[in-house]
Length: 541
Image (cartoon, rainbow, N blue to C red; front, side, top):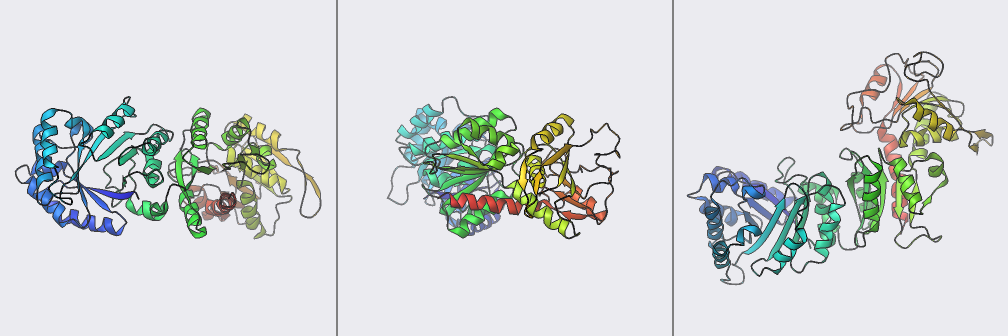
């Protein structure tokens, strides 16, 4: 079973009572070890550092690892190297010795420090002798000699636990950490730092990692990308992850704002399903998407089972599934955009392994139809402005057109709007009332045209406006902006819908509500499309 270890930095002896309180809180949050980061304490209390550390260990509510990290590997200890290693040796030999001491493997290569630490951790009795966690860190990227380091540390008889940590450059880097864990010959910690490395921290139990580090509170982490213990326990259900756990995630750029992990992990918990759902940041370019998603799907040990795909990758998902020979449902193929991928490990009955669909389309139709109904209007015959021409806009425009609305697409690149309109016009469909219908989507006037002319945003001829751009999204390119110009007339006969859901009240929703329009925030569409996705994820088995 992998442990949660909370690292707590202690800068001086006066901080010890507070540090012990934090350790007690970490225990309540699910931590089973505490790492006392004593870089500052060792530097400022050099004469009494060993005694202060002994107090931390003695009064700690959790088994302890003691670390005095060198500046070469990300620490702040200002001691001479000989002093630093001598202090760690005294800590290890003390009556109140910690369970483990963490020392850089490079630091114990020389004969003298090696002999010093070997003597300090020599068995006194079965319970008292601390173990050595030998560590190696790289804050710039994957070490070029990573495999050699891993082999040397595992072969070293002085080392009880191997710790390797490096800065991730993409989510693919996590897979090498998992491969190291899967082939380890002694207890190992293999963690990646930064926004791309969260997967390595959450999935440590799946691959048998000795422990993962998590902060006891937001903003107290000791490495980039470190989650909190509460997040590991409550959001990702760390204690329920095991070798057979299936992995899902939300693929996008950015994804830090996404509510999908909270939604889907809660659904998995309710269903008693052995799955975990993670944020999977993938930069916007097709090459990044193809390489990253391909690596996840192909990894033999990951059990990657599906994904939600968001801005800007919904069109990329269609291309990916086609290139892989997978199955696109009819709507996703028509739209040229998909937001849901299901991975079947052994194929479906018709032999397909990758299946993609689009749950945005039915979700958007459902929530906008309900809003229009409050004003006595049906989608059939309604005139709706869709702002944007990306994957979300394709789903919204296509779904509304299939429901009988006339859709006008606006985009800052007029050619994209025109291309989308051409692709989505002319599909034959029979409506619920039995009438035959052909979809109609047109491109709105370019930004340089008359702002009040026919098919312009401010023409006064629209029953609803739907924002399908990231404008207004927290963490997006324009979090304070609104896609509607001031010339657009709004009153209580008009519906304004935003597909952005973080924050729930975007500048567009706030402005539209203030001007009297009926508003539909992105939360409604998000929850509906996510519920449809969840049903697909849970049904795959």
